[in-house]
Image (tube, rainbow, N blue to C red; front, side, top):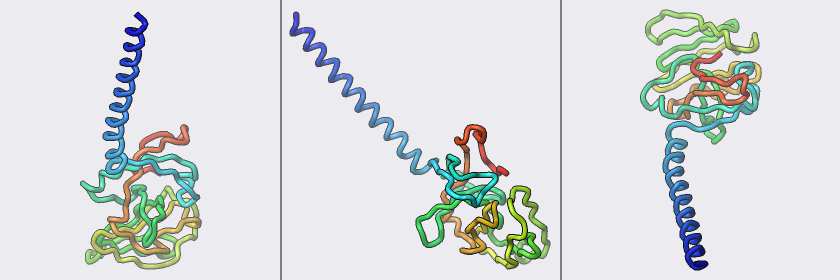
Length: 188
């Protein structure tokens, strides 16, 4: 009788180990591709996007959308810094084939060749008198990105336009802090 109980116990343990290994393998097979090609976590570090995103905010980044559609003005994105491995959170201000002119602390946008110009209304920015005057002419697949907290942001005013392939993804969801929980979209 004792042998049967011991054999049954060993069999249950072996089955339990087998099921656990199977669960781990299936979990990895699901999580790893999702993490690599669909979405990934990102923690904000720094003040360049305050007051909209603060240091310590925990975000989920959508890496899939821009494979099927182009980024839009106002979207908050994660980019890989030109010539480096540092990641930044920024807001898209200028789109391909646009001329962006900064004059008297205002941003004016026109389609190159079309002449019509409009002033960008930016109710999300923090800080005034922070724009050095300048003109940016964007080529195909180039974007101009700025931080919302202009006095404390390293952005396209310093490193120039970014290529579309430098965009890691757009901010999809803020998980932390709890009082900021929600989908981001064109958050301000």
